[in-house]
Amino acid sequence: MKKLLTLITLLPLTLLAHLNIAVSYPYIGALTKTIGGEHITTTVLAKGNWDPHFIIPRPSLITKVRNADALIMNGGQLEIGWLPPLINRAGNPKTSPSSATFLNLSHHVELINKPSEVDRKDGDIHPDGNPHFHLDPKNTLLLANTIKEFLISIDTEHRDVYEKNFAVFLDMWHKKMSEWSQKMSDKNGLKVIQFHDNLAYFNKAYGLTNIGTIEPLPGIPTSSKHTINTIELIKRENPCCILHDVYHSTKTADFISQKTGIKVVLMPHDIEALENIDNLSALFDYLTGAIK
Image (cartoon, rainbow, N blue to C red; front, side):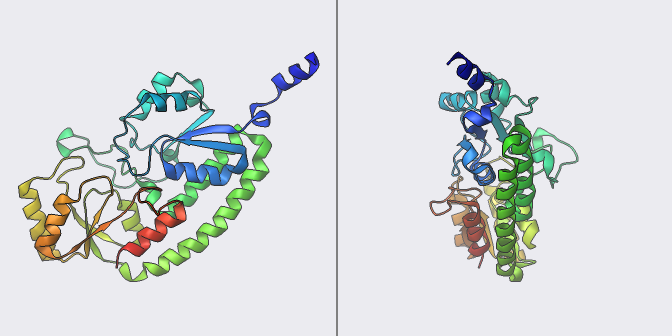
């Protein structure tokens, strides 16, 4: 019995139990679970209908980070206001940014809209560039491959499983991308207004042109003057619609819509941002079908 207990103690963690991977957002959890399959458990810290910029670091989230075997974050400073405090208070070496069991996805994609300079007068801008890169379906493939390589690096025993799951996902995603491109083929060059520029990658992927935002600056509430200017801009440029996130009030957008006649279209940013968005394919099915 003593020999058996000693052997069990010496076995790698991955042979004894699932890896518990903490992730910052639902889309990361979906990709991680798709690649990891039965060999991992994902713990998602933020809900899909929350503003991804502002998450309250509740004690329950500290416990989740403390119990994790690894952590995957979006990065691009999207979590800058809430994830570092969680990591610090959890005190888990496995979720430390310097550990081999920590992954920052933003280091593996090309960020756009990087500011030439950073000044607080310009609002809540992201110094590394726009961090909402997962809303380009091409980037999803890069992220899936990155997560696959990460899982292999911390769990080499199941390399073949992760490779196989990734290959299945790759085939499915290529087919879906072709479908979405077809749906959006007549939208190239279409002008849009946004509340906040969280759809920059989606717009670039499908040739939509964002001509303005209801926010005068990132993270800054709109003013009467800016709202009037936006109404005048819409009358001049004739965009098709206002693309609006699900976590800000649509009050100003509805007012602008009444004054200009253009519609407000809710555009979810993540899984579970709307009730019927329960997976990544459903997210892009919705996004590519919402603009008519």
